[in-house]
Length: 466
Image (cartoon, helix red, strand yellow):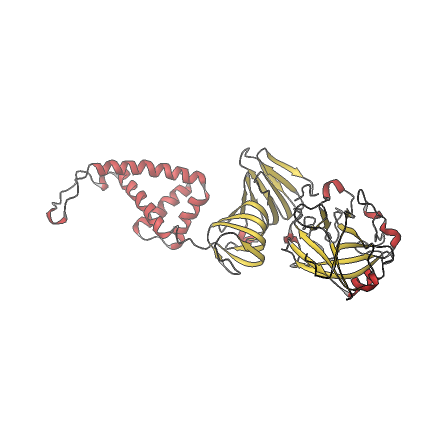
């Protein structure tokens, strides 16, 4: 019997005698909940001793009505049979734990610290500051910051299914989560379908695909350890390291992402891109980092050498349109999830800029294999700025970091003037993100292209003078 077995027996004795404090009852619950081996040995001991107690009960006289009962001295005595006494204590302990820790009155172990556009599946009324007992949460849209009683913070991004197990343990069934664990939460565990991640004083992210087949784990700062259920392998990760856990084991990753996750008025003219649209990525890894169904934009954090910045470009034809007669213009973009990166690595509000290509000779760009340096507006002498001789700023718009679906209607006086000044029957645009991510794994924002299966690509709505 090890030291904790001795401690547990002492706690059970105090519980049986009614002397246990609330903290001691919580200690029993905590250790039985978090130690599978201890639960197994405890249940085995309970079954054995309960069987002995049942054997003892078989030797007792059958109960008779109180008024006619004759109290006889039993042939067996608890005092003479310690094992039976222990069995009775175990059974009583189980009953007492069920009273003190009622499943239908679970104790809160976390709370909602803040939400951003959050929508939940089910009937739970979850708002800011809602207290959360152990259980499963299904976030259908937006983001939620969940603060555990241990101090650990989990930033959950939709769509996600997440289980709160205790103040020091959670489980990501599917979706994305960013974990920040202060010193008080050292050892916080995030379980996944094929293993678990243990914090060693750090910030890390975990993403699990919808099918639960693979979990990607990445360290922003500090250290974590990965524990694979099937193989028993343990791997430690430090700053800017990442690995994937699946049914086969754990494998290391580099930090380049490798997966992809109208309304016209009665007298308006609605125009689309007709397929003249693309994205460019700074390191030109088009096959890995771009997808034709999305117009992808990203600005990496200062000092990044990964080169995963992205810009979107598209053109819209104005053939047979009298642009001089246009009084108003709306540019509509449909936001879609890219499946790449974490919104938690962005500030609460994300700003984008819309540029118009004013050097009409630069409108002859190709939609395939367009390199970053060859794209319109590229300025070799500045990382984040566009060449103002080729592109003009038409304005900016903002969305919340948790918004990954919906429509944006952009309008400005500069946009109207840009359309009116066209002489080639084509207007071309560049979309950039002005808000930098906190690290290489910040979210890649995306807008639907003409090839997107669910949302329509960019449209230009023109309102002629009546």
